[in-house]
Image 1 (cartoon, rainbow, N blue to C red):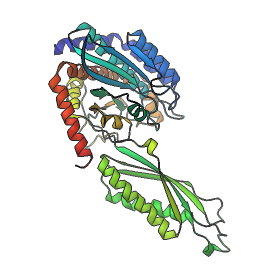
Image 2 (image 1 turned 90 degrees about the vertical axis):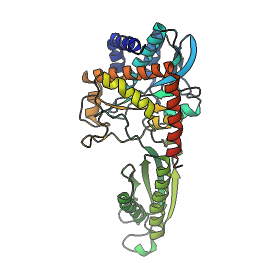
Image 3 (image 1 turned 120 degrees about the vertical axis):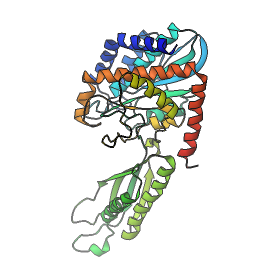
Image 4 (image 1 turned 180 degrees about the horizontal axis):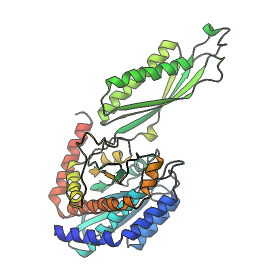
Length: 401
């Protein structure tokens, strides 16, 4: 059965290659920002409907969608995820057009296999998730119940290299406001309380902290308001700050240390400080399910992929994604795959690469590999249970238990 399924998946995606590339190219040519992806939403839902899926448009969010196909027997429900939002000014510099193509291709191939082998019990759901770039679309979908009665979630991400276990780390964001006292900077500086000194002090404290945090942690901040004029002691300043970590317990600990850096600067300068936590844009770290990842690796390597995990010369793409939140709800994978460029994500060079023909071969490999993982989960109850057991262990480790 394994080889027969593999043959169906391969042939289906190869036969649909031009169609899938067309969808990807159309999304690439018409980049849309978070929550504004109406063109991509309509293009993908029309494509899925054309291929025989039952489609629910505007699912929970105006530019999200849910498309499903079920076999004749009730079985595991596997989600393959599409993203399609772009970045301001530089378009698809994170390759979300390719993520949409891969998810669409995997969904079509799984459906073809379920039709070819009606004895397989299962359901494939192609889920369109908008606003990954700072909008937390998947978090809203989770809260809306999109992942209830789902057994696993699969998604890939283009990058310069191939990593089975990419370190997508959790992120939290803060807005910091310091309030001091204005005064003439030359005539009466002693009458002032310098809120810019507080912001600079906080920034320097954070710089000192960086030496003493784990390599999987990140802290980065900017001063967004530094004062009104050079001859006025600044009475109000603001900072924007992100901090990240690979595990929830580490992220919580880092947050306390960041707050200490900020409050210390306020105390030292005599200023008041307000820390606003942007909970709407917090993402959890990615928990790659080892059972699913190793099964994905089996098929990806069979199709020619060579993974760079463990290669010290290939530094993995370390960022944050709301796919991390999905991985805390259901067993999930989110491998990074090379599209044949050394340009980094979120660059103009990567935008060009995500629309280039060279990206197609590896994108189709990811679609085939995800499809095979989904079908294996439907055919092998023991494999599904192993993935769920691993998921529970991962949750316990992530909490620091």
